[in-house]
Length: 315
Image 1 (tube, rainbow, N blue to C red):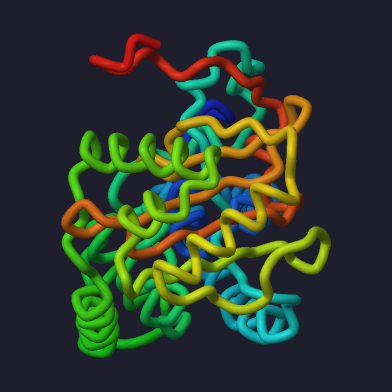
Image 2: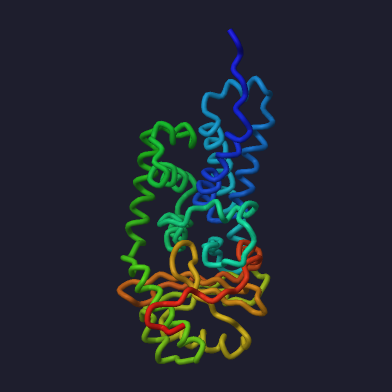
């Protein structure tokens, strides 16, 4: 009887998109996700040839390893983020289709992440409040539809324990989730918000912001950013007008951020801020502004192009 042969390299490489999608949702950091995927591949190729050939499902093997790497990273990340300067926000992702002059996607991990409801910034922020085990169990089961026996094997808990972890995570999501304004309406509100910000129209900004809105900025201690959340629509409007006065030469672009309408600020063609938003009943309730340049690598090679003309805007 002939011994089993190793899977083709193309088969192994074909798992990278799935693994990157999984790792980004588990970690909220594209950089850490890519490191976790690379570690998974390194462990695969460190196996002796006969052991690789004996693996019945390389995809399942890699998923297990990368998930366990992410679980370890989540444990250590809590300690690192306690020392993080200012507020920590997940890394934002662009939609390359909106940047027609950008380089090809082949080498960019961001292009392997599917922009769906499980990467919206509001959802990723809720995930940050979960324990590592809750997050892994919830993402594997509720997002990627792995059965609990398989989740248990990956997490190292019983299926019943994983079911409880996922249920606890689900309650967190339900408690923190407010109904989102539909995308087209959100894009329209953000267009008005951009125009009001550019003209320093405080009254218009206050009208677009929920009275209880919160703005969080992430500079990572590398660039200027407010260290504490700015709370209240009036306070946010005042803060934004101050920023506009102190930052001449900024270009604001309407662009998709993590699958939903957002804003990108550029200076001299370089992205300096990416802002994600959550709206409820047509008013802005949350703003997450990422300024840490280490989190803007997926945006660094993207060149500014006018947004597609919107009906009725004449632009």
